[in-house]
Image 1 (cartoon, rainbow, N blue to C red):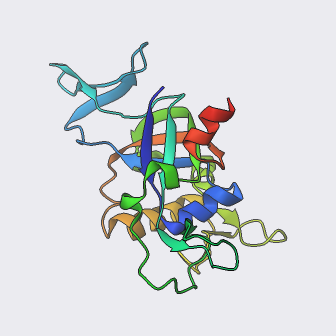
Image 2 (cartoon, rainbow, N blue to C red; image 1 turned 120 degrees about the vertical axis):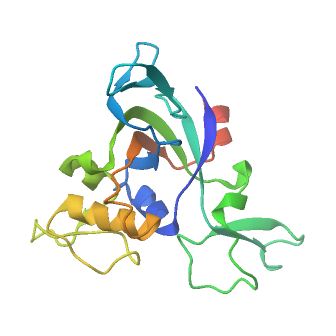
Length: 212
């Protein structure tokens, strides 16, 4: 079991909080070259074979079932009002939940969030390596899509304010999300990705350990 940080946008944090997001896809780095297939060994490691059969090489996939990922998100640190406490006690607010309030300073980037400020922990339950465009309808939904209306079952949307659009296909919706995050042409490039399935725990990673 390994503990490591993982970054999410405010929109995706909202999807984690509401329970709609149970998967995420991360680029395999470096990307494998001209390969024939990807497969997993009995020890859990991932490998690729060349088209000409000349060699086999390992992929660096830094995720495995049982790993714990502590979520980094945009945040701000403010002081508790004097009416609440008599000392200057700092506390943390999160952009995903309060994007409208002026706290007297800019939001801090997620990359600078410390482990003890994280409020969400993801317990990895499964990992697979695949081409981006091989995502299934069910997996696209698990990336955080929700139905736009309980009465109309064919329209899908992302948590606001990422998109105001509605989509008939979860896969097309996910393609648009990928382009939004990674830029034009990123979906068409069809890179290799690690698809990570997880369970969300609404607690700091170290609080989980203390409660165990």
